[in-house]
Image (tube, rainbow, N blue to C red; front, top):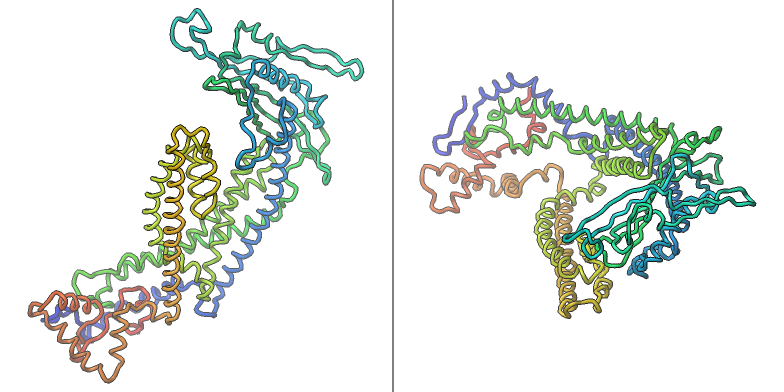
Length: 622
């Protein structure tokens, strides 16, 4: 039975209790200690490797190598398909949009020109008619192979308004009208005597007259030309065809009716089988570089990795549960707690058993499997677009990223190799708390900049643009361009110009000079703490400073006896009130580390409340 010291209320044990403990829990101890060793010490100690560690490491290296190879090959094919779509869209822009110039195809900053727009009735009608004419004559005029199949056509979607100034039927209010019609009444056909090809002409005014719409351009809100085309692309390096279905629209838009009609052109290119276009006996191009053999091998190794990681997590959960049950029975006998309320290990000790690395590895393998299965084995489906490739590439890329990061866990065998991750892990809590406070300041600057500078600075014109600009200025970039981008000639009040200067200066001082340097200081502090920790032995790292000092005094011959006597007097002085709060605090702190020995008139160290102490302490084993 447990005995309580009459003065200190500290648990003591006799030899009979120790014998009873050894007999009741010896077999369970050995099995549990062995399981915890396998769980907590997966891998190696120093440079001594275990066979399971080497097998798991080789499996992960092969998997990451196959995944990286597959990503590079698929990236090339995806880039080629994106180039085909991009060049085809540019060709259609030059073909269908009157006045389109190569200078509009670049993205310089600051912009070298204004919006692509029209301002007169004749110009608008001429560009609409030009687009329709070129669409119907694309099979003869375009250099690329563009054809219209039976279901390919062009439709006009028109949105305009009515109010008393334009229509006498309305006495009050504004009425928005919307109509959609197929190109037909304004289209005329002629034959080329030399080639026999049909040549089309078009006049949009005839369509408006047929629909009995008067002066639609003067009250125009938007006019959209929706069309579909088919195309075939062939590359010089292979003998396969790329058969495509192109859906596009040309938008003439003036939603606030200010007289500036902007022009936008968008396409959606869909890969289809050439047989759908009536082209037989030709190989369809899918993905040239992607190998199904590499994909199959990647699936095998990824499934093996996923299975091993899942088994590891299951084993960790089982060991955690068994440890919890064991400690519920034998905790007080093994750790000899200083108070009756202490009946179990801290929850953090149980969390150490479950390795987060395995959970990350499972997520990475799931992402990799999801992207690989579709890319390698479902790519032969007839219809897919670049957006679909982008979607599955994102999951494959996340899987590749997580898999590479998870390789860090195998670098624990050498502390310097693991230094980077240890520093990040040590500083994570402080960094999150610091960034939370910084985000409050950032929100204030963001809203202020968007509201005040948005109408006069293109870099703050939208909420997303304002956030991106402030994020870029954190590193010291974009400062000059942000200042000169204020349209001084359009500033309503000169105070906005001066406000922008003070605003940018204050933001740069706060974030670039102060906050960035504080973040660097957090990492430096963590780096110094980690390097100091690595100078100690593995056993010394688990000992707290006070316990380390007590151990040193107990090992010193000249002060050991006097130290034991002094500590014994402090621990046995609970029959009288403490002379000060400092003495009471010292007594409580010492009781966390020391207990009165049941055999001698001295003190002994209490076992640390850690699972490692249970694994390493063999004093209660048979």
